[in-house]
Image (cartoon, rainbow, N blue to C red):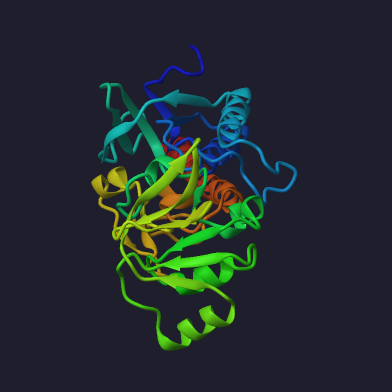
Length: 324
């Protein structure tokens, strides 16, 4: 059977084929587990030109990371299957193949798994400014540590969504031409306003009508009064919401991140959720996770799931040994 075909059952089903999911798949495949990574190709960082802050892989294209990671998983006998999981449910303990969960893909294919790792990532709910979504990951970015060096010394706009006065101060580290756009929202607190002024960060209170784009590049932000403020880069942090449809179907809770920046599946340090047999890794359980931390979370969740299976296998072997 080809490595991209969906088997009837496996030890562990990993939902999501980004950094966390492929890392989990690789760890489990190397442990000799039958693992299936189901990937719908919706990784949030695919529009970006490269991954940064990734030691030895600096600037690697996100799509190339997925391609190389999938090859690694397949190289150890794991499967990476294209598709989207539409439904998931827990099975009764007496399932004949020891499976604990049943998954159904959008195209009707089914998969039974003893354990599940949720790694579907998140979606960014961006401010509804015309042109913003289309430039996302290019000259509209969200993380100074991920993209600041690449846009250094450009004219930068920071959109005020959440505690963005502090974000503007951070972005100022990479450019001395930073403007905070309130987009009709509340003004910064007095102390924040003083800090912004001290760092030479202008504040534009008027609502934004759209991005101005010319020759496939941002040239400014057009305000509702018709004025265009020249800018080359936009930092926009929208609300980050875990892609948690499957998690919610299984009965898991999706909670606010402590910072208020988004919503994520609750899990402990190993990725263990409130439902036995289900783990979460990457942005689905930590909306602030970078690619590097998502890789680590995938390994942790996979190792914990494998240990759980080791104990179950031992108990089953013991029960068979003492059976009359």
